[in-house]
Image 1 (tube, rainbow, N blue to C red):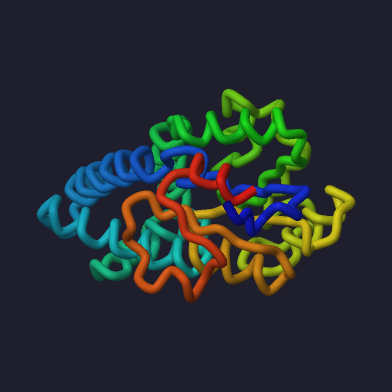
Image 2 (tube, rainbow, N blue to C red):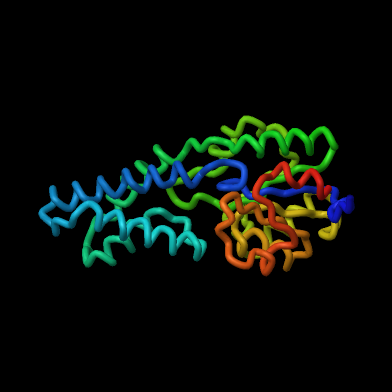
Length: 239
């Protein structure tokens, strides 16, 4: 069987929705914040929007801003309220909602196939790294990562947007990654769920890229990545 990544020495991963199911915890957190916004607007004598309307706007705005790389949750709430025609909210209130968001979204369950595949890589003596983006103001990505059950398996952890490293899709974190691994970019593979920030960006940096698309939602995934898998353990046949 052909193994197209047989040359690989270092395997890097995105974190959220690649190794852990952040989507589920984020949905629960956005739902909680939406309810709090609804109650706040009523208590403050603002407009009384139906809760479903607020949820629709919050989920839509957060999805759009997340795709654009805006990770500051305070801005998510501010833009959501602007879309509802509500302005003049004290910024301290945004921080309260952001703290509420992270109290719910902080703990994300690892995907079982991620744990299995990481152990496989460690047994094969690959260099294993994380290249992920900051959680932004009010969040703490490094603390979240420390909760990962196999955190000690990573040789390299890079958080774009922190420590002077620009966030993905900038090429900075990928360049820093191979420098820390002390291998050439041609021997690095990036695995992630975001076709642009993880796959296209890493390819521009010289990596090979793998898109993990567990529910086969990405249209024309071959335009973004060298390979597409629905389970991380499928990569064992490519290495």
